[in-house]
Image 1 (tube, rainbow, N blue to C red):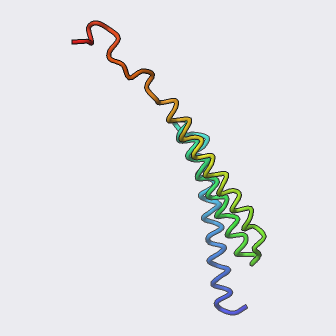
Image 2: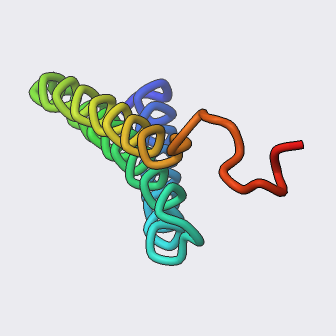
Image 3: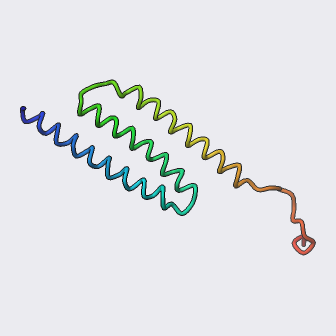
Length: 107
């Protein structure tokens, strides 16, 4: 192996290690998240980490087989984020925009 190939392998291996560490930290965040929104954001970031892991595997193997899978995962992650955002927006929407209901509040 030449020096550039060795450097390439070392950097890709370091990227894989960082992706694995990020995945482990995300699993911790998903399991211990204080709210459902934190868990949902953790799952969205986990999808991005999976895409990064597949990209590192593809670079390590020098194979483009995983690119369509990465594209589908990116699409699913995006649609999941939009769905969660819409759910949160509907859930947090005020019930009524009319004036106050009690007589004490109507001054």
